[in-house]
Image (cartoon, rainbow, N blue to C red; front, side):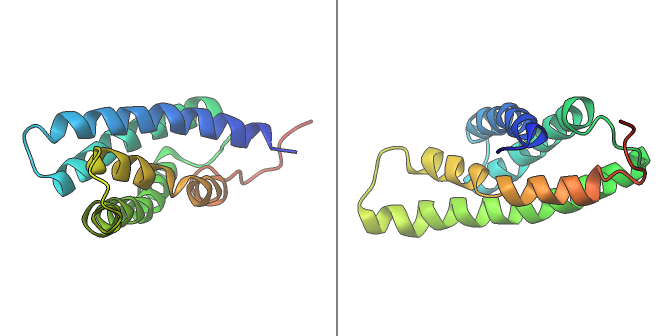
Length: 136
């Protein structure tokens, strides 16, 4: 059975992904694709932190500075994964397949989705880890 917290994480991540995805499209109007991905990732990351802290891991008892540090650390790894997948599909996989229908948009969506499960466990066990056992 799927953990309730994981489902909340997926919902919060979905909203953050929409912020990331939408802002990348906007940023792409004024800058290159890779830079737009990085800046959009920061928008999504801020959204994700606020939603996860408020709704998913609200029982976390670590300090805010601890949470911010680990949230950024976990997400920097996810950013690298997102960027690499987005660029790999845009520049190599889709051209090889002959796909020309919005390759940057689809590649970015794949890049955003890729780190979901790994990020959940990173945030559960590092960012928002509880130091005390929850009360029944």
